[in-house]
Image (cartoon, rainbow, N blue to C red; front, top):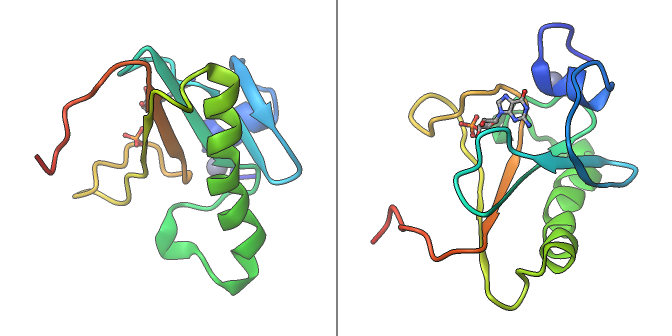
Length: 115
Ligand code: 5GP
Ligand code: ZN
């Protein structure tokens, strides 16, 4: 746990969050400032800053992040209608919270930054 990290505090229960899913590796909760009708953040329980820090020993974490997405989509009723998975990395990637997280966005057709 990183004492200065708000997402580590969320995993530890020190900051309240609206839980959507969890397993051995990841925790998922609703974004406090939703950008879509469904906006869930999936984070590793272990503090990892972003994909730059991923190493071979993080295979379980990396897989668990992605594998949680379809489970959450099914739970939220957006599996068939569709959803976007976004991971922001570093300053140009517009990462604001420096604990790796995968955004799950659904419930409405969203603008696409790549057209
Ligand atoms: P980023 O820009 O780093 O990819 O996204 C960070 C996300 O975390 C933002 O969408 C923001 O609304 C969300 N967020 C920041 N602080 C909190 C918090 O304390 N609780 C929850 N539930 N979401 C947060
Ligand atoms: Zn953290």
